[in-house]
Image (cartoon, rainbow, N blue to C red; front, top):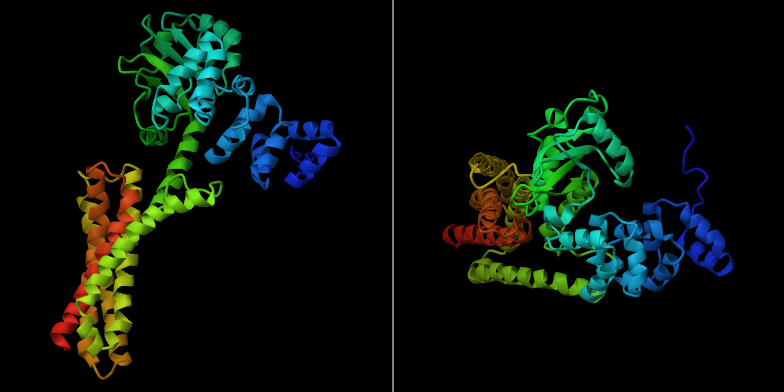
Length: 453
């Protein structure tokens, strides 16, 4: 089989900008033959927004919206900032309702309202409905384009209507069966429809227990349902059970990627909006908030150390060894924290069923603490022979206590934050660091004060 991309010219942003000066027709031809994701990569490779805006003029309107949606939000906003309402309308008209709503959220509300006012009444109604929902809920994720029929229709009639109107709907995998009040009755796959007898009523073929989501459900819950039931699309209903839209698998894949990125950023105490497209001042401001919080926790640990200043002055070996105790606790706690936060994100761990995970992580902390306590006791005794086994025993006990505390804190902190409706990925790391540092320093230096001074 030949590679469909083999004849496509490789075009960098510099080459494209040069071509814009000398052969605009050729540039339009090349860009018109490129895939949406390749066009997005081309725009991202530009050195600044002015270059992006120049190349955007040569991208066909029918795919420009999809290209812009592939870009980070910050870049979208910068590119769209110079678009006139008429130009945005031309782009929006080629998008599905959910994508159109997403794109309009990247422009000022006044411009978005003007663009919506220019659309056909049916499109205006659909997009306005989608924009009324929180963008991180099923309602904000859904699209209004779907194929619905009455349960009293025979298969033959459904196929006739499908041939007439279905080609306008992308990713058409299911037929949705509703009653006279538009309440969702069931779902029918196209495979079942195509091989059914023409005279059979649709209501007899529809799967009444097909999974569905409420418009207000969080997008993470939606993603978990897609993973659980392994479907290609899922109907969205309102509080009355009325069918209002559908969510397709390609949108859920984007959600999974966004949520994974968000959790990764938050575990590092970064904003979920932090990316390479942001300005230096914006990124510095967002990161600075959490650096300030971390500074306060570091001061708390330093305060603990300062209480044992006389002990450290008399036994210099303590200054050498105490970072090891705190560091081991921090690493062990982070390992536990990552497992628990990931389990919470996947819905596998809740406050109600967390006992088993809690016992396991604390047990792992004790086992690890015991092993490394013996190792460090031996190392400390040989490193500082004048203090011998006394120092070895002190650091061994301190390490046991801190790794136990790390396992306990790494489990309890995210579960408690979840119970308080605080994102565990956002705040857990900072709290954990404080716990392991304070417990490690206090235990090690406290025991040294009792037994060595």
